[in-house]
Amino acid sequence: MVARICWRCSVRSEMKGLERTSRWERITDDGELLPTPFPLTHGWVFTAPFTCTHCGAVNIGHTFIGKDSHLDPYDAMTRGRVEIKWLPKVSSAPSFGDTPSEIAAPAREAYTAWDHDAYRASILMARAVLEAICKNHGITKGNLLAKIDAMKEADHITKALKDAAHAVRILANDMAHGDFVKTEPTEQQAKAALGIMRQFIEQLYEQPAQNARLMGEEEASSEA
Image (tube, rainbow, N blue to C red; front, side, top):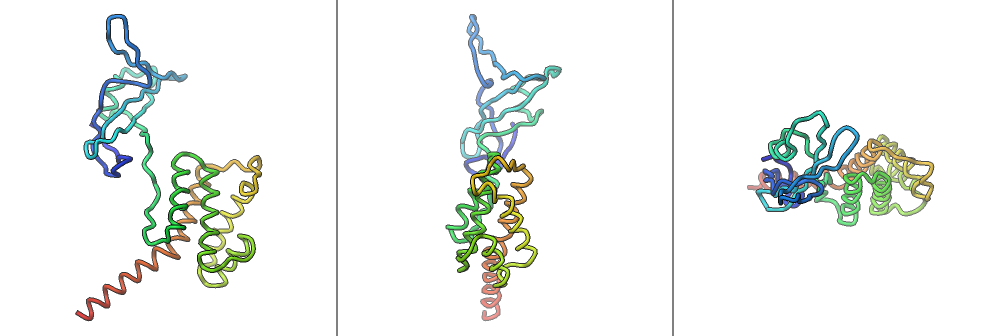
């Protein structure tokens, strides 16, 4: 059996194959079940359902097997002899447990968009979260450029983080105004935008909350 992080229980567990199957199935005249692959130029894509041994959820695995390969598709997948890509994808979003829900929820959506290769949506959500953070800190006047500068002037963020936020703003600016033809964002650009958004959240919400808990524990232990 192969292992993955289950999309439902978020636990890395063994995946047990349900049956010999592929993207489509057909029955021959003599009643045998034959796996029918999805053909590509240099091979085939095989797909099979698996169950999580921890929670029982169905996870779909698919893999590419070249024309020169003599592997049995189902055997290769269940024994982990080929690279398997899984559906549904497991979210890469952090929990942001110390962040206000009106910030954390859209931030997680930005990660969800990136997980599904929706890079424009991911960058636009990251930009929107940055502006929401500015407003959450009482900075509501002007456009996003002015808000980011005001965050630095109020000592909420460092100069480096201010410059990074402007990079996200510039990257998303055309798309935010409906000029999608001008911008074709890449996976790496979207990943960088998410990283900057996460720095904002960690510096302004997560780290202060963690520090407060740590100081509270130290004070409680000193009084004991």
